[in-house]
Image (cartoon, rainbow, N blue to C red):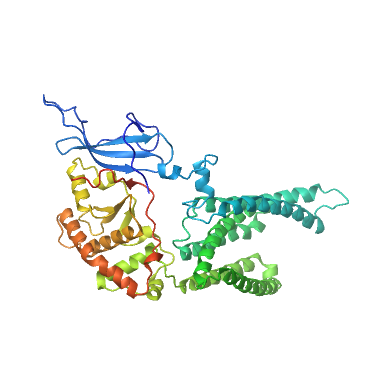
Length: 483
């Protein structure tokens, strides 16, 4: 995942760095600054944390159970593993924005060549769209070919400018949030409809403010484009779920039949509604009719997504499986699990509260002793993560998890299992490390049974799609030392 730095000269140390991380010591005095005539004890590394931008945090023991944190900056601005496949002609920021995570290993060999040809194909298509839009506006009386065409051209420019603002929303969603959709397509497909509804509101109020038609229509188009940016990738994941026998093309084609059929019926009913006297003569009636139909639309969308039965294990379904096993020593099947899953819930609002990818500095909570780091590393020596508790002693503690270099999706599931066990066994705990030791013992005994019950419940271990956070990562440089 992230490599261990080679010894000698590859890092720059010292001084305050001008960006987000700032050297901070947990000590009032650095090593060697204390009084006394003895030689200061040599600083000993306890732990190294690596970030994707090349920054490392070194947690150093400086004697007398005290510790300091040192920041170092790698010469390169990107991680060494990412550099192995970096194309020198494409900046890393651009690669992250336009290419899938893990490129080129995560896609087929023909992916990039296809996209490079598809891009100019789409450009020429949109040029044609602009020209055709101008012709359509002239056909309905905005300018003419025989007379002045300035009005039609100006109207076409304004119209496609609105489309361009909307396209920017899709660009942002695809570039920045592309990794979201595989994990929870049901949630993002539902939120796409919420965002699209907000866009329709902007368009609906344009008759009230005709002087602001372009900004209102542009905002509406932007919102709808963002909604489409969430909708299309999510639905492609859903289509792939339907293609049980690898017949994705046929599934997509038949879905088009269903969609076009519903479009024709919806357009027909919409024309009939628009032809009624109440809607034609009253803006309020039109608005209330739209609101009623839109609410029905959202309810039907939620119902349609609720019937989906995914066999993949994302973070939500992983929580359901783990909670059932810890509480009842059983693992539900995929049908029951999907029925229990709440489509709209965000991870941060689920219980117990678990934060993944947490820096060790936050786990320490200002603790000045290196003994705490030593105990944590020893406790989790055989695990690929470190879990600690924030707000220990409260009725709703928060669990903090940091991952090591070799962590996998199974590591995330193990941390989930441990956190749920800790949540269940909150009573009469006065020592956090004794509590954690008990949970590790329970994990070693119970997680194997959890995996066996998963297989008996028809879950596929190869379909665990919970993601390990990319940063920070606990580097294996010192994790296996004798602490």
